[in-house]
Length: 161
Image (cartoon, one colour):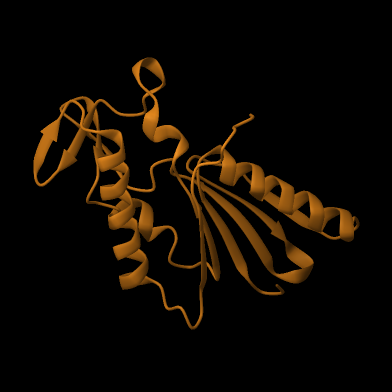
């Protein structure tokens, strides 16, 4: 992994995997020089002695959310803003699923956009399918699989914070 950039992209499941990997590597070489950069949506932990960067990019839906007329729009066919941040990784570990079913105050968007139209809501499984199709098209178009490894994990059967 020397000289590599590993990026976890998704929700708290990905964040937990990111934190666990950092802990395992830190425990194996406790005296190595490190640097942490926290941000939203991107946080990165650097193992300076090895030139290894491990990042977490918070994107619970993978697709973009944009503010339109003061309302958060989940853009089921757009991943441009998020995807630009992922291009430099050597290993991409994606996850999504958990947040698509939330309603009310836990819902991360006000509208869904698909086909150039805005909807208050659509069937959540249809929305997830559209979002995953957008993500898969992004991977096919933007990832050189001879240089970058891509992994995907869907929703876990149980969820603990």
